[in-house]
Image (cartoon, rainbow, N blue to C red):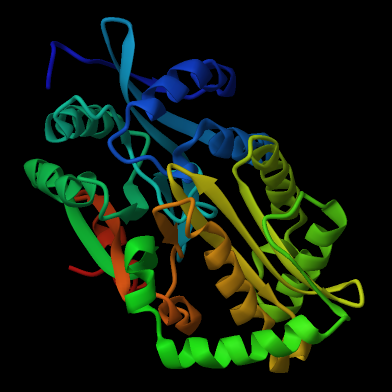
Length: 354
């Protein structure tokens, strides 16, 4: 519903943003769809670790009768396209969150709120382009943003990509949907590993900093472009994971062989579902299939306590051993029409889809 006039403001200062903590949490509790990535703790830790002199907040806040009804948590990134530097509005936690959105109270008309919010954004001249990534189809705005931007067709051109998916397991369908043949093979290897006294499997374990750093090394050795090769991200995740652990929201499981970590799983527990955020596997132990065994044990551990296991972004084969359910994820790119060189540039065209 729309109760009256929403007053908007744009927050650019870090201290002003920090003052939103209580109101953010109240808004989060009144969202139609809650995700761990929308919680205050995630954005708070991100800003604490990555703010610098070039970090430019552009947080749009809508308030009515002293109550915050919407927050668009954005920042301005300056990026070069050839010799041209452009200012891009992005979600603040863009590189770390599998799901992102503009926060809107569930008892408000989302279309009307988005229309008013984007009017405020378009009136501001400090940006050239907007890039809103990883909006889940669980959110109404995955569709509504395109409809709203259509109202600004004289000012901007809007591109939408729907190329990413997030598999998830409905626990009630797990037994009938799991790949029986594949599970039979995993269970055979599981029986072998269970008899091996050198192997120790820890499910839903206590946070352990030493184990974490062994998982970091596995990730860096496995992925050439590992984000964990950047020490800032290692420190961000370590701080975030520990604080989530303190709140009972961290899923932390791992496998050791003679006290050496060879596989691990990090995820979250929130809103009656378990998230599978990262799976770590030491490739030199691939023949043991410990990653598959670990995921199976994690599912079995939580299946009587949660309704859904969200495997998050990615189409890795192992995610489909247990489900055939997926949610679409979309990205929006919005370009002011006066940015002709940017709109026609080969670099930007290569990453956009009508």
